[in-house]
Amino acid sequence: MTQIGDFNPFNPGPGESPPYLAGRENEKDQFKQRLARMSAGRSPGTEIIMYGPRGMGKTVLLNWLEIEAQRGGAEHNPIRTSWATPDELKKPIHMWNCLLPMNWKKLLKPIHWGTKFLIFSVGWKSNAAASPALVNTLIKECKKRPLVFLMDEAHTMDAGLCRVLLNVSQKVRKKAPFLLVLAGTPGLSHFLTTVNASFVERSDVIGIGRLDAQATADAIVKPLNEHGIEIDDTTLAQVVEDSQHYPYFIQLWGAALWDLAKQKDLQKLTAQEITEAETKVENRRLNFYEKRRKTLSDLGLLPAAVAIAALFQDAETTTMDTLIDVIADNLPVDSHTTQSVNEHLQTLIRHEFIWNPPDSILFEAGIPSLMKYVLDRQREHVQKVSPASRA
Image (cartoon, rainbow, N blue to C red; front, side):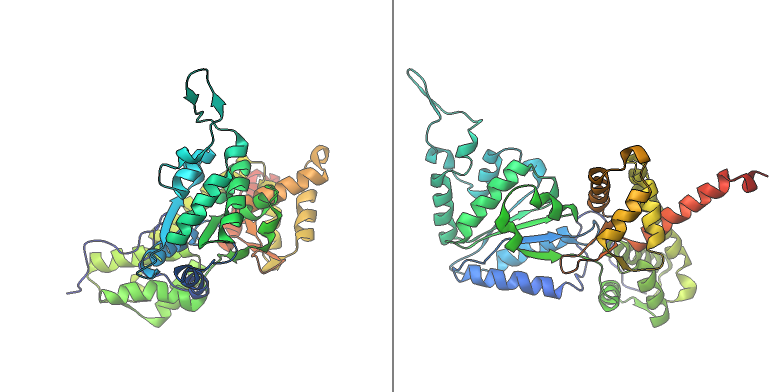
């Protein structure tokens, strides 16, 4: 009897770590090098900017980095980690609560003197947000114990607070082991250009995209094999291709295959036996597609998205100029301006319909099968409303 645990190791969902983190060796090596420098008491270098479409595993990598940092520091110099999202950082005071978990308020100079009492205003002035006293204290603390500060969903940060954080990072990392990691969607790149911190252009940028075929296979096979479940090569190739190497879909497939093996007590999965799993994956995927398509429609981006999807039928990549032309051709005449075209382009990027990896000037589909779905739905709509279909 197949020995399968009570819990499915695959857990498709936002930020959930897979049972086996496959195909991110280059990224992990880069992080390990930074941690080694910090553990030795040295500055890790520049900030790390990490972005890619949702479902690619950015949060998973942050989780991995947090664990690696906490166990990878030298015994005499353990590395501290702090994690935050923009929802938790509304004011500089919140940022400093993460950076200096101590009674740091006593370091601030009073903002206002009353007639008899010293009054400290929690709504401090902006010029106190990165006061020399706080920065110097953070430097001292990082020399005692290096700090990795992880910011997820960084593309939704307040621009002013992001500027403060980046400036603090620049000052501290020059003198102490401090590493700032910002992770977000493809819109993060454009967002950082709005914060007027020019040195960010010299930061290390990591693009998190789809896996290759081997990593996709490993992410499915290894967790199954660990629990006595095999999958034949032909079936595996079919699953790998259907997943499009997209980490979220990989986890959907893994979870469905696991459930199938558990329910039917199968020790080996073949093409004849995975129809049920395929149906389950497709239902989840169609729901995922429709939510994305509706968002594009609500934002008025659907005409441009359909035209771009048609463009990507015959090409895996395209240029920004081509995208601009396609968007311009699908805007109402009265709103056809350079600004509106650029806003549509940036919105499509923010919603990950398209993106360009950091090491390329070419754009690619965020999820190729989403483009196909958008295009197919548009064709269905056209057929329903055309005179021929009503005849």
